[in-house]
Image 1 (cartoon, one colour):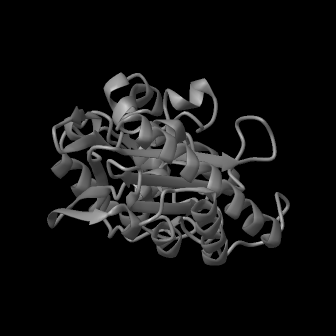
Image 2 (tube, one colour):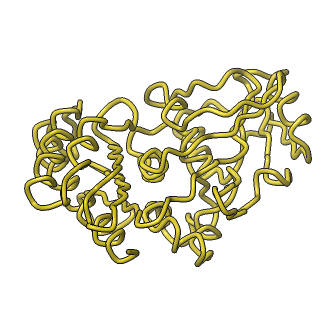
Length: 291
């Protein structure tokens, strides 16, 4: 931290949003800071004020209710993975959280930070989008709720206004015979950034036919996004190999990847198809096990 930077640890949302509104782009929110500290050191541009939100009760909640999970934006990935009831209801989301960095990083990293860091390759963002999660956002003008899909605006950019922070996620509890899954492809075996990430949720009826599906992609466009046509390819099918292959094909067509040192655009599109098939199959098997 720069010696000229000031640190604040507000205890209420009103205090936090007022501080952020007052300092504008010169202030940065601190939740886990696993990305923030790296960024400011690389860029060398230290903010005037750090606003640590971890003392605010609303951002630390893990409340699994009958119809939804209320998950505080500053809950660490490690704390999330320790909740067996959450893992049972949202296995794909927990899978994504457990892929973020090392064990030490997971003890600090948060889903709110993963979203607001706005990396196209964030792991938990496609997992949240596959679950049709909403973000609860607080600002000087009050509180609003938006779909997680509406928060990323581009690499490193979000739709949040000055003074706004993500307080929590509201994630619908899946209906009966539903499940989610998340998988990614990385060059190394661990602690790397996704070349492609795929989150899938499916619901099946008593006969095993798919009645609802969502496919979300990461690292293959400027932001993570829901591949609507890929999900539509699964609905009305028995989630057999042909349906999974069609979903993979449509996901690949929806991808808009770039070429960089970790892979060419063509490679990423190919991996998108393969990973969509595999992730959808994993979600299918979990859903069928719940019938």
